[in-house]
Length: 319
Ligand code: ADP
Image 1: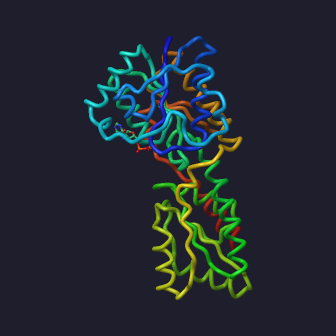
Image 2 (image 1 turned 90 degrees about the horizontal axis):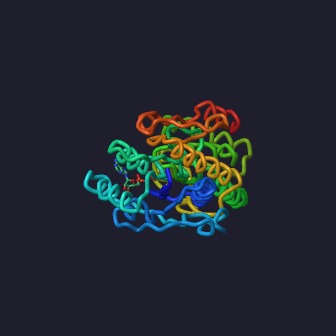
Image 3 (image 1 turned 90 degrees about the vertical axis):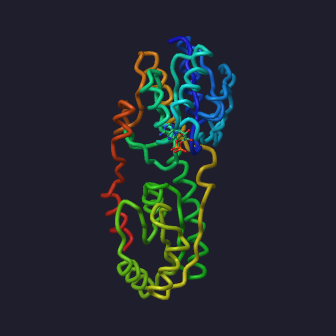
């Protein structure tokens, strides 16, 4: 393979730039040319494609967001859209494509693979919800953003002796809520992967208050319900007053942590190796700190599992 392409797609995540840099540098190191596709599959269909040099990815390893921009593209869900994409890639002499993104982006890569065009998926999303990897690029940075917010909210919660509900992202996965709640010492964590017991939550809050607890932090994953909805049910059920903080898109931004930069560098490089070995249709990941890769079609069929032992631990530690 003499020329490959790289794009970022779907929701952006801190560390995507480090992954793009790794793809470009690794390929050029091995005398393979790299073309950047701007604005995800949208740019692919429209031919928004440009050659990247070593210097094109200079000074981006520490920057959040993605230099290649990202977009959502409905047309790419159709076979015609995918064929337009393949034509653009062929017209530029690009023989394989690295797709950095979430599971929607993987579905696009899978569609190209099924039509005979080699793609490798690199997991980039703050949600940590991609099968075939224990960690995704951006997750660690998002966690650090959330615990920074929890620590600050805890200060004001203590001063006013209040209960705070913090709504975090994660789409249908509870990983951000679980990990940040554990790291932030939250009293209660609600994740979509497990049912919650409102009576138990209320009695836990009340017994904490009786013991003289000055604050309570409840972390709610957006996949369960909104922070406002949960505040409303606490009010209705137990006449408990709370304050709600929705962290929103700040969770997507910021300079990637060291862990995310290292992960992105390793995964991006592995994706290039696979293409150079002629192995398209793969999804790279990390398991027990070892790089792994799966058939992208099989990976998409695998379930994402949240660590329920960790969930149990969070309950034990927040008595
Ligand atoms: P993420 O990659 O973060 O999960 P999305 O779910 O929005 O984000 O997907 C990003 C893009 O991937 C979509 O806008 C679309 O262009 C493409 N995509 C998503 N699902 C499919 C699919 N089933 N077939 C082909 N392309 C898809």
